[in-house]
Figure 1 (tube, rainbow, N blue to C red):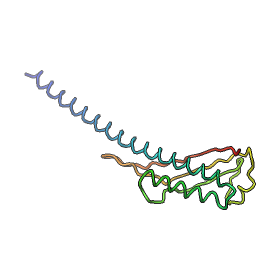
Figure 2: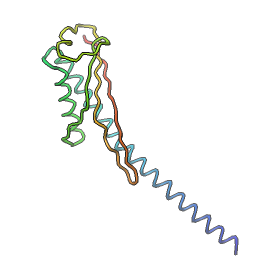
Figure 3: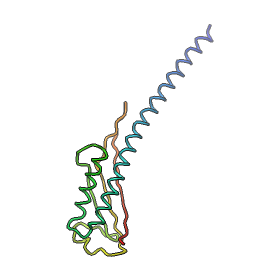
Figure 4: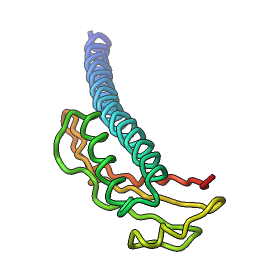
Length: 143
């Protein structure tokens, strides 16, 4: 009789443990799916903005245009119309450029590094909530 009570107790503990593990697994999968979705959106937006930046590097204010392209593509992929870009910066051959005049002296073979930093997003899952921020860096050599 005593042995059957222990089996029932251990069975209940086992079922509770399995339920807890399944819940944690579900929460982690939910967060990972949201994170992957944000990563794909940011990567696509950074690629489009970098292409636009390189094509219009000698135009007035190419960094602002790249920021607008990033926000448009990011919003389109996520189906969200909020401003999503916190900052954008670029450097020419390792020197940070703050104005559009700095890019007019770029020539063939120069290396341009562009950094995009979107605002942190809130990831939500049952019983969980956290912030996820990222910085996307693109390096391009002019040809």
